[in-house]
Image (cartoon, rainbow, N blue to C red):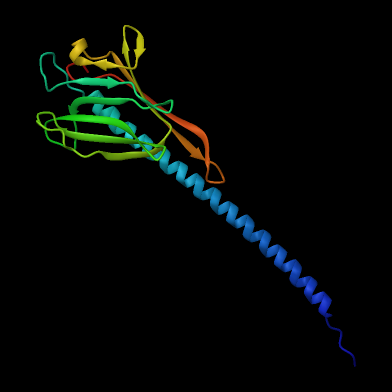
Length: 202
């Protein structure tokens, strides 16, 4: 009795088909994994940016300024790196990180072509300014702060010159979301408007 079997050619064809299917599945899995990683990275960056904005909003709303007090200030400077907005804000406020009145600075530094949002906080009564910068958000596209004065938004303010606080403050942070390839994709912008609360009726 003769048994039917597979020829060598049939076996080789079957192996080739299985290999092609495995390669296609691996490629699909790899692309899906990279897409998920890119989405996760974007979500983390967005969440980090929102957290930073929440803290900045609370501190800015608690800005303390009083005419004649040299340690109390609100100073907004207009800067940019390669055409990208990079405002610098220094103000005195009450923070959970230090007891009493604090001098807080939010600024942007450039490192290897990337913009990094940093924060510095020291006591408002300190005679030196040796506090270290803490990195908050890496590789941002823009950090813009504007102050409202007589119904117009301006990009600079100095309480030593104006002897006053702005009516309203608008802060914008722009980051880039990652695409499926893990590269920079569409911009994502977070904007917060706030008014100072210290010394005003609630």
